[in-house]
Image (cartoon, rainbow over all chains, first blue to last red; front, side, top):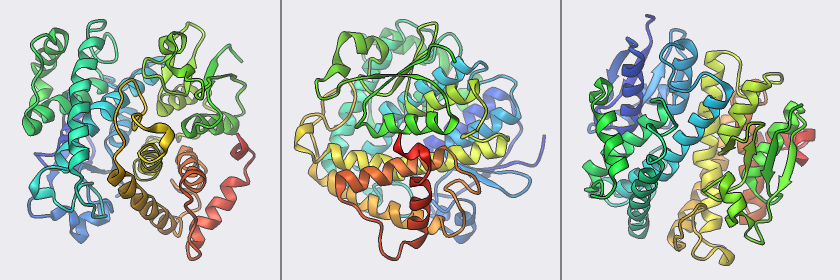
Length: 213
Length: 213
């Protein structure tokens, strides 16, 4: 296994999406912690890796820095295709891209948006990245409503399929799990008593060894 | 060329991202118009293709429907690799994914968000998809500020490189062009007099035959 370094933070749901991916593929990538509490992501050293000051990032042998979760996933999958999580046929690759993206746009992003626009420690930092934006209380409320729809829609989807993108565990499950767990932890969301399909899936994916990553 | 059908709407910037991609790869895909003005995207027929009621969508020979721009792109690129727009090496694929995503998250999405949260015809439809959400005026303003940052940041990036992801035209340029053009058309944005790099790139990508797609 080559000297790839991955920069992460233990509390970051985006960093977790990459940790689960690495665990599922059983890769041995060196993890380098970035201390978000000490604002290390804004240091000159880290900004040379990711000018957007966000974790996670991957630095490969030649020094090239890759950030953004789907970009890191794509690199690792292309280089280590075993235990594919992004599909193997053109059709699978497309459908996993589609379902992963829906889980992100309808679930993961609203959860992050609700948190960033309401938590007092993130005042003036309503969006990750190099620019400062004020929180919008009305947006936090709308995002919470979207998270409730996400849970309900995902429950309905999982009435038809075992995993989010179909018969096999994929990157779409990773994003959905990270979204659901962060909604529970940071927003106090809960899987509804009648959301049996969502609960069945949540129990199954949470029991995989990768879920503790 | 097989009987792939692509559902689109001429005014949709997301549909344009796929039209430019198809034009750059010189593919012959049948286009089926969806009349957004007549709310055809909410019809039973179209919801069978995309339950999220959004264009564009691709329907392949076996009837499988693929929606979401990056998913449609991935399918077409895997099946027709010539004139690659998503990269050919693992590193290129990752970096194009990264830059395309940044153009979307920092440019394309804020433009759409500013429009959807301010245009009177979209009252109660502040987000595309099956659920109804009210507009948030404060969000529209924040999104406009983000679009200005996007223009400035892209200008800075293009001081170092010919195209958004590096030396070659890629999917990242398509998303950036669709974002800039829609900002100009729908928000009245303009490339700043001092944004020479952005202007140089904009003139070059707009002159490609695919830009009229």
